[in-house]
Length: 183
Image (cartoon, rainbow, N blue to C red; front, side):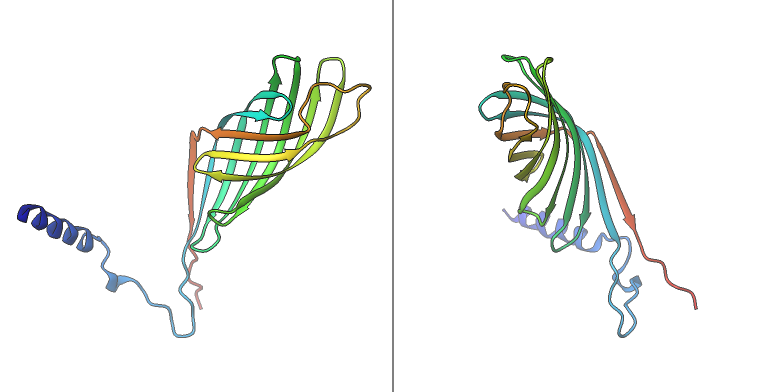
């Protein structure tokens, strides 16, 4: 037990004093100026796989790109996606192009999709407002497709719930520091 406590205190000391830049070297802001933190943004992208449920069950495949501005309070995330899905039972194919955003860490996502549906005889275009919740790389969305009226109804979801998982394979961190102005 004593050796574990000794190791804990020794390891804690290394972490506390292991900073290569001493705190005394950080410049304090001049009186009346605020401390300026660097602007940090992360760009992530990758393919997604998902399932959409409504009246019909369809498989979704596509790609998504996310831009996130890191902040201590209310970080902002934007994302653009392009995807397609196919209803195997009724031979209906669809394409989606969308955008969503989230303000905060545990808040809802809000967005919209432009949609195209076809059963290879009849085509339909439209849009779908969506609201969702994203945690880790899972994104659960609910929405309603407003489609143009074809000659006859074909088998596509109007009201739907979609669950997607994004496989992040590209991540880019960008740090922008403000430079001092020379007088």
